[in-house]
Image (cartoon, rainbow, N blue to C red; front, side):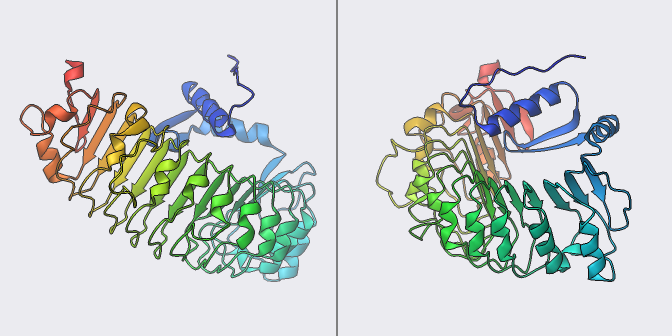
Length: 403
């Protein structure tokens, strides 16, 4: 069997290392039907049944899927997945079941709104398994996370996404200094983040849904997360603006803003994210401007590493941002996707020739703009004809570069 090998520099980011492993496994046909939703960020794929069975075989007995009727549990179990549609009639029965487990590092509840009705069960897990690295409480159904969560000093991953009732997080969560991933997607009743969240210095990935009007307005908070690599702001119905303070996220490489219907404009500080590589902005019905407060300035210092840019379902957007054609962005951008932006009727007068490294342009559901970009006859065709890969409403167009 061929052996995979990697030469990895001392300063290589764990995200980059993970992507290398993913691409290596992909090249060896471990995955199939791979769809790159956002390159380097989100992938959808299937695992062949034989590969899945092989993985399960080697993972046992450290990794097991359990239910509350499981009798024989190997002592070596470290990664426990709870999967059951029948919650025990007596809560004491569920608590006794935990006594069968020792040295657990991962707890993943694969039960929607069933087992996690019992907050005492969650508390029992936290008190019993002090060394867990991963706690997945997705689709849980309780109003408050126990204060004891702060005692899980080794926790790296915490998923509370899909909890429709939780309103706030305990301040003790800020004691999780080793936490790297915090997922709070679709927590529609979450009112605010703890004041001390800035002390969670190891956070690299944060995904949030909450009620705040401004996520960066406080003196401390998200702006203090200097190690943050990926930030998703999704389904924040009250979010109106992103105030100054984002520029302090000096390591941020991926920013996704989606389903924020009240968002009117972006902060000028967003353009000072010099490490940002992927920017996705979608489903923001009121967003008119991408240029922030500094309307009269050329953005010579904007971004610096941006490679992939997605605009989707922005009905009020009438013009591409000025920073797209000025400053470092013009030398770094590889992909530009413009989807469902009907008010965007034309490309800039100077065209996209300044985007010298642009390899892919995709335009969909922008009727007037697509009409202007039709090969040879469109008024804007000469502005994009140099781009190697052009897609208009899903149709691949031959560019002048390929002729």
